Image 1 (cartoon, rainbow, N blue to C red):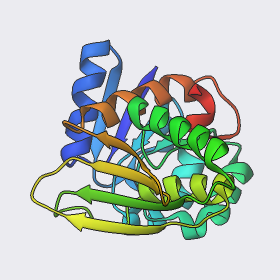
Image 2: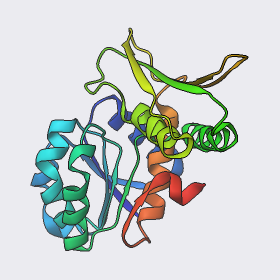
Image 3: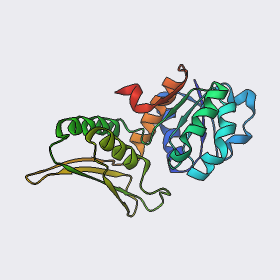
Length: 220
């Protein structure tokens, strides 16, 4: 398997390190993914960690260029159907996630199970997220995913609080409060490495997949 990284910021560098440790060939890391020659791209899986604006501009080209694409960028979900349609039209496999951390995906599963138990028992949910000051979207895509799980399972739509503090890699909290007690679920990332590990795992999967998949559906 060969990989091209789209976006060579902190996450791009972290993905590069994981690829090296796993012995996976990195063809290049670039801030201009649309300039990759098609004959090169068609042999590669693209791992995209750019910005919401960059992905919105690039996705029609990316869908036609690559063998498969892993999208770790968030902040584009309002055009999700347009993005999916572009990949379906090109027949390009896509794996996407609001968060590629294995721990966060276990967190999703735990929250969903809790909601199944708490449904109809009078619990009010709240979601809080804390990230570094450089993160461009707020609330985070992960927080929105948590809220969607809660709304779809518990039947209550939570408010989402978003904080931007220093260099915090990412903390997500889901609370369920009743008149007699409170349940709190927390995932705290110590670094971005967990996101990079999950994205590379997704790229390995995408290399042999067809269709469009959310990462959590592949591992849970």
